[in-house]
Length: 188
Image (tube, rainbow, N blue to C red; front, side, top):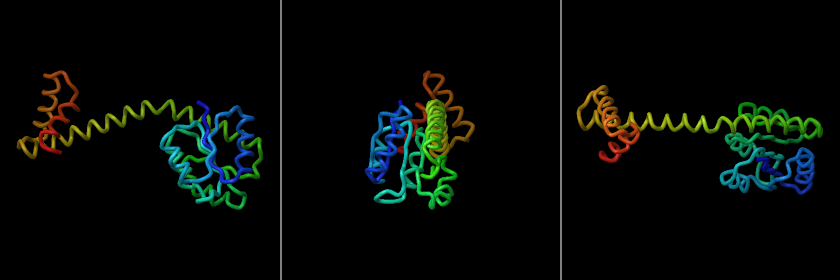
């Protein structure tokens, strides 16, 4: 997937960066003019690359770039030279590549390739991260069920743990399923 979200409030900004992206074989680009519209699109679709050309008509775009960095997309924040230091400072901890318009076409190409590499790495890690998140949710659910057994059935933590584990083994289901039933039984 080489889909790009380009957020630039001016027609000229869109044309310049669309041309540069096209030269780098990014032909599928969605152009947006405002932060608000970009937020909505980012929640509905996924992108390999997000380019935010600051300032935008309804804000600088810092929060937008940070939100985009929370996805698997590589993110580039383009700013005027006089705002480079401020933008770099605001984006330093978010994984957003800050690009000044004085850096030139060659450096922009470098930034795009770097962010494409970041995207590939994040996209490859996403399934593993989702598995780990699911495990964490399962552990929390089982812990909550144990607390309910302790509270309502007057079990010790060890007894509650054994009870959930034994039910899961006897019925050949996951501990998560037993925990779900316990949570429903006690109305949590």
